[in-house]
Image (cartoon, rainbow, N blue to C red):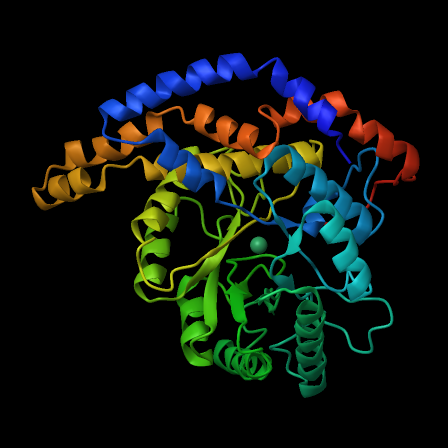
Length: 424
Ligand SMILES: [Mn+2]
């Protein structure tokens, strides 16, 4: 997809400056008692999954403006994901969405292997109707009033598990659009009971070495109430279903100003944090690029995660889930993966012993200063060096633009007409 010569040429012009910056940062961190090589090793081992739907241009409820070379099918999407991983070395897995990505398992495995990719969590879709589907999800899916619709939605999730088993996935992520648009439209309790019954059927079919992630969302597409609206309801679901059920936190699925890092801490405490969908937001579920609006919040989330790394069995799944409306999705996803890595690296720099001491001494000023000292550190040389040593690009966007990949695929993939709305 991207020739090694392109990456090598791009890196050659940047390597000397990077080594200078890396050595300077290493000396600075050494004075703080931090070994830069250890931080780099942990960053290098950190990966974030890319959602297959993320490589297509997104849209809003109003319109979608496709770009050149939009992927036509899951194999084009895998190619694009392969480019992202080749240039960043940070996105080794792809998360599939069924039915959008349906294809023979052998073909999926062959293409992924050729690209050096694996498969992350499977994502079911009962928030829209698919061609040929007997019953509609207009009024809900897993919580629908009609038992037959619920059965259809459960069967779809079981099919997602079967497809996932064939390609080496180990988790199913369930997000439903179920809810209501009018007060009184549904009975909150009966609707939730129906959801739990359906979710229990899915959980019962989960392979022993799989995890079930349920994802909460405050609003949209239902605008008055949603069935799984917040982390409290999500936690109730995970508790009810069993030990392999976990809560997935999508950063955009909360009200503005909600203290998401505290939700993360609570779910860690309960042993129910399953993983993340990273993105950023200003007003609601904006699906903006991770770290583009509030990088400090992303850092604070990772501060909680790093603090919990020693907890036995702690293994949250990391994925990007955002909508690229005005950028080349490949460029956005590369930079977002780097932003997530950056927040992780910064969180690794937090002096936890000092922080705990200031907390216990009620020294608020110094405690928050410990976090700021880590957040203010420019860790880019660590990220770039990790990429260089993996054979990825010191500057992924520069190497990508130099490669001409987008122009090349635009010549192979027919132009897509825009116009209609659509979140993804
Ligand atoms: Mn999500």
